[in-house]
Length: 90
Length: 438
Image (cartoon, rainbow over all chains, first blue to last red; front, side, top):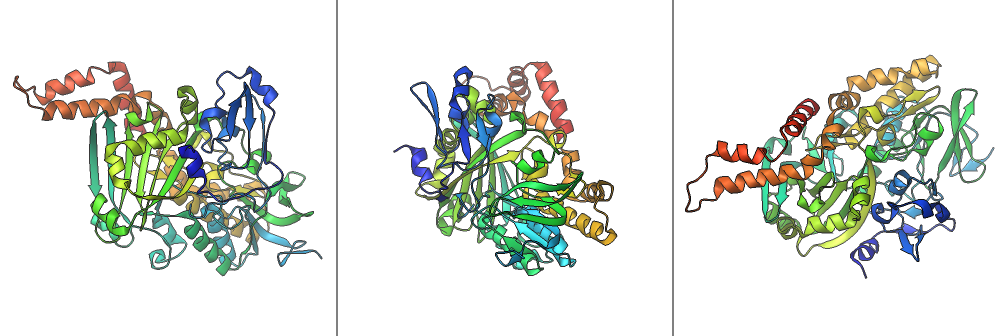
């Protein structure tokens, strides 16, 4: 298990059924830099067979991907009330 | 009449506050204490659930809200030592400013953990009469013509009306954007903070950090571990844990193809840092954006029926040594609450009355700090600051301290040759920008 995966195990999440961020990865095709692969502190973005895959479950809701995606490929919102990340200590 | 969480949703509140962080709770406490009806809406499972800090609270601002705050507020350690470290290869240079005066009233900085702190502050607002609902997202504002008259909450058919809405919904304030107060955040307006909370016994912390009793230390570290990425590492000692992490510019992460947690690992791997946290147990990992764009990146702060406070309004100052955020949130929240009181007394919620908010902000620490440090973001973007200068400082020290069998160089010669490695024009520019910024 990677260092990051182990760290993320310490974070409490209440996973909503509906994703709060949706990626349209057809827009990633023309993106050279792919900042999402590097800027996400939870590693929610992965490059699998030249396609960007996104999983919302471990998201820390920091908003970095929203600012850094230059292709408008993300529909970014907040999870349903009470869901998503719940920092216990902060 | 519809009821939700015991709140009569068809009631018109004097004030609705979106977000129960320091800005929101300060606004709600101020308004409720003056007798206004106040509803706070928080999207987290509980208050504080979405919040994290590095972090140190510059706490004197609390005195304006809760006299003799230190007698009851759950803070961690008063920070006695402020240490600045520059690393380069096997070398590190450290400055320590200590002040025992920071250990007694009115204090200065405290290490803080947000869940307990936010819960305390919202409790003060509740005690003053504010209603608090958690687990509820505000998706949009309600308008009548040009005026904001309430909020739309996601669950049920929840429209809740208010005379004034105060947005304290944090750095990603989607609502301030929807209300047309600001555009999208730009990459150079944000810093990404990533933190690990590491448990250690109090005695171990005191021994390793050279502390006595409940006194605390804060570290701001720049150097080669960050690979030239603007930003640096931080450490704050809590009672029985250490907050450690980095603040970095996301654009530079992407350019360098390195993730923020990798920068944290590189920071923690420095022997100077590793010995401080050795054997500690990871309690929590967290990340958050910091609005570092400064004065020029701030949104419009009000419109008819609407005020914006805290991170949502871009209240944050990074001086290079200190980051002010929570204190400015508290101060701006209080000013927003006071503005709402005035508007309610006059029965006028137009932008011209709400513009009084700016006057109050200028009198307090919030807007005056933003103005004083308006050039700091430019200085802190200098590529040399995080890369070349730590190297030069360590070279200077090494050459002054190393004595070989050859004739020793004078300090002036060493300084001249080291500073000669930076182009004079860049040195002058950084000196000029830095001098004016700080």
